[in-house]
Length: 127
Image (cartoon, rainbow, N blue to C red; front, side, top):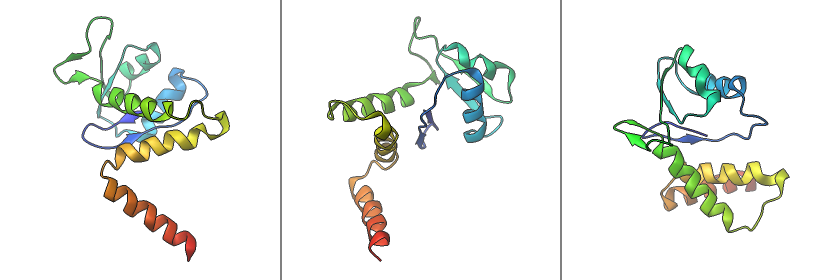
């Protein structure tokens, strides 16, 4: 998952978390010269020698240091897990739909806005 501070979250199901996989997604979704905050997961090491300004937070030592934190994306995963827990298991073949629903809910926090979007989508389907 990626989160633009003050912006939207983007989630994608991936088969592995190698540097190559993660860097490809970050390069596709994040503008060059952006500041990228991560935890200390080793696959993010590639960001140290990239066009991004990379800051990492070591959660073994602390969770935040001024602007250096990943609390926003951690908040998304916390909300997603809480929402998905209600289903007592999700078939693997449908998980991508459930996680994209969590993305939609997070990016459209206002319930009225959610209903408006869903209504407009349903209206397009009917006509």
